Amino acid sequence: MNMINKTIPLLIFLSLLITSSCGFSLEFSLFADMTMTDSSQDETNNQFVLGEVDFFATEELGDNSRAFIEYVFEQTDEGLVTDLERLWISREVGDNLIVAAGRFHTPLGRWNRTYHHGAFMQETISRPFFLDFEDGAAGVLPVHIVGLMALARQPYHWGELTYEAFVANGPSINTDEFGFTASADGKPEIDINTGGDVNNDKAYGLRVAAEQHDYLSAGFFFFQSTIAESGAGVNSSVELGGDLLEQLITGLDLRLEIGEFDLLAEAYHFDNDSKVGDSKSHNAGAYFAQFGWAPTTKLKIIVRHETLDVKKDDSYFQLLGAGDEKRNLLALRYELSVSNTLKFEFNHRAPENRASENVVSLQWAFIVP
Amino acid sequence: MKNILRPKLTSFTILLFIALLPCVSMADLILVAKANFPLDSVRATDVSAIWLGEKHSFSNLSRIRVVDLEPGNPLYEQFYKEIVGLTGAPLNIYWKKKMFTGKSFRPKQVRSIEDVIRLVTQVPGVIGYIDSSEFTDELKVLRITRHRSQ
Image (cartoon, rainbow over all chains, first blue to last red; front, side):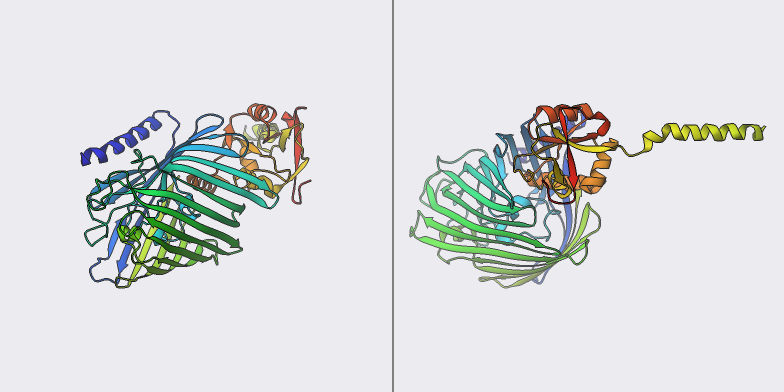
């Protein structure tokens, strides 16, 4: 069954490539990368890692409609995994409003909606750790959604206000396998329920941003959801579809570019209201601030600080195996050409409940347009 | 024999060069909108930003849509070189990155100047570029300035 689950998306994707070569106008581009990493931890090998291979395409379906697809091929311990990361159809309704349906990246801050899965796109090798994807080691945010999205923009003389509003399947977590506290054996991931929801509770949210071209952008966002049990509930005593916790995520993001300097910062606040166990409410926070300096058109130097600050008895972070952590990184990016870049990164990771670690990475990332 | 042919060949070459001259010279490119478009002139930086999907309106704040000729068309090449300032592979990769974000998409491309004129005159808010020899009364020329738009 597992084999079928992995093979069918691959066949669908290959058929899309074949139909595109037979005259259908869908034209795929791809991002890919090769990374070399080394860690200060003895048990971690230095290694070469083949990164995600990210195919994407978009096509106008008529004067006002458009489709977008993004497929990621990833080599994991379980073999080659294919993920349909984004698939949506949109339609322009009036001059400044677009409605869309499908699977999107959640409008949480700016990073998640700008870089998506494109390693070549992001200036550093790594994402801020708390913005990791749901199936990643540090994922604590529902960075994807499946549902409806409305995008609106209101022009002003100084720039424009943009609105991204959505309603989507609520996230869920399966507590059956690992219980209510993540362990060395593993942790559950946030399930965004692409194939269907486990209950009638929908997630909704909005990001409003003031933008002046690409030079200045300031946004506010929120994400409201009820996180449900997507297992049988053998550990949580909550049956499938029952509420595990109510969650409100709010945040701010800022991007500023002045000459060869730029700043990107995002701050998140979690309000987790547990519906099981002690039924307590907990607050948590996370932020990152990244400064960039481009002394030449080809070279950029980047420093970034990342922090996740959580309460020890917050069941949401216990479930996901996340605790207080700070990371500081220094990165260099050198453009070899418009289509490929070399990136270096030194990342100091200081989790509260584990030994600190230094990770050095070198990446060659590219786009095939 | 060679001496007899040389003046004829030289004259022929000069005539051929003169005959081909209009083909290799730069077209007289103009930016056009529908005749009732509210602006007479626009800033070159705004035109570039709108064609690159970074802006969506001029100073009057009404939504602008643009129409492109296809790559390879001499007018397309001239417009992107002289006005937009981005051509070839860098332009292509710029759009791939922009489209990847899902927020801006490449301008609609049409094959002929007739198609440009049809869209400009029939769809509100559409602007495009044509050769000045194709100008019709249904259109208005938008003067491209290096200063503030009027």
